[in-house]
Image (tube, rainbow, N blue to C red; front, side):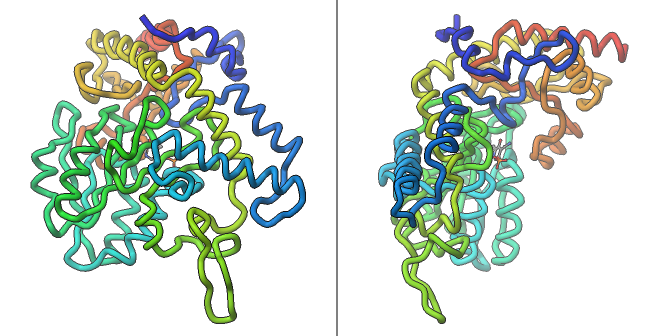
Length: 411
Ligand code: PMP
């Protein structure tokens, strides 16, 4: 049984009432890409624009003060959400997870990586970290190593132990894979990294939305996630990093707001976290993201995780039963998030996705920004159904009906 009152949750998400064809209700199963937005988040953003829209930091007038307080409070809210030991100073708002990782790669990587150094990634990295570290390592003359993914969809930790040696300066790993759903033991990778004086970045895009996450317990040095995957708005992401590391790091972007004093020749930088937030930041988005954290917290992250598991495990079971479906990722005995990637025999994932769409079912089809892993799996593309707190087992049935329809068409 699910611990969640799904009907009550669904009533908070107006978009779930819409139809995507004639009398075709929406079955939204693309939550690993972007989640839907509940009324309290929409309201918070709307209230911001209706009541106190203004630029932050610089204004003495009432609206600017209100906007500044709300924007700063959003930093506190994120620090609280992920257990940032240093509080607000350690929370940098970015555009998304991708920009958060780029910030670290450019600002930390370009000044700390050199010839002879190595960066360790996993074979299940999203392009957000894979391509970014590839490029930065190349510029720095550093080497990139990949921790193997085993056939059961788990990381080969023995291999990680072999790869992480004294040459390694950075380990960058997804907390959960957006293709396989595997949740990786970041704490164990962190211990390996720290044993060799390397730093570790966790990509939390697929975990912060659906389970309790504590960066101090994971013992990582950097952590990144996106607002739009956790019932929040698009256009905002978060980089958390240890205060001592942020203090040492050069800025990533230069401009207004991030400076203390500027002369014709040079500039000194503002205090944390503003040193890393050049220009006018995503103020409305920060307000919305804080409201999203409040909303998810009210439901309870343990409850969300248990509900997602309840729906996803059912989908996994039912898909495994089908002879014409190949499911990727670890079995139900492994800690995994609520997504299932699969392939249907004789039907390209794009065709399948298009037929499912005719039935109102929204799933992702493609390489999900993880091309090398798909090559390793031997498939050009997969279909991915990903669940969130508002999804139901009835919606899994709708997905299965859609697969039957696709089978009827393709024979
Ligand atoms: N990492 C992972 C694991 C993801 O799933 C995603 C989004 N698919 C990203 C990074 C990138 O997130 P964004 O597009 O919000 O930058």
